[in-house]
Image (cartoon, rainbow, N blue to C red; front, side, top):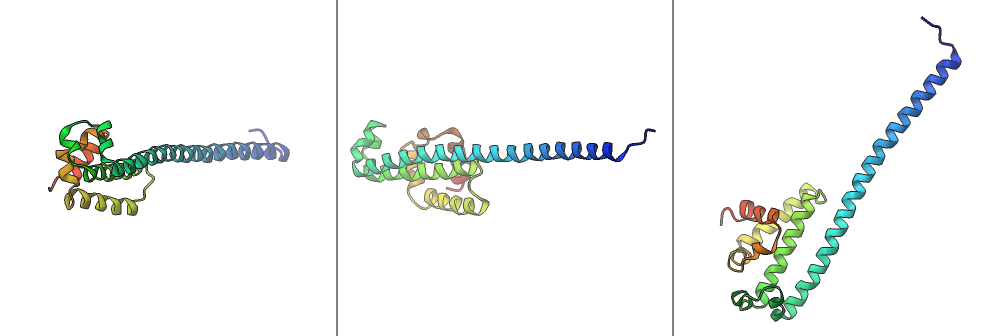
Length: 154
């Protein structure tokens, strides 16, 4: 077995330390990139939600504008109340998507989940979900969530 002198041992330790530093830097860089990806997704979803929020305000101010999106006579006859119901439903959908992306904590989600259940079960949102065919205006994941977890006992 070869004898390793102090200079060679020092070089070996320095090499191992450099490799360990690179591995740690790569690990934390990946974590930072993942966090940046989540922040970017949240920013995009929130931007879209702000635009939807503004449309909801317009629909509540002028319920006749709902015909732009749905010219069905049954929906048009509901008026401002159904426009607001759509607004609330999109808000619930936004909360659901924030939870899917891991942005809402368990505690926050528990509160919003209960709020959503109350809106669908105690108020008229569940009724409009069926009568105004609101489910046609949301993505399949949220539609399944409402039908499977929110409306199961109504």
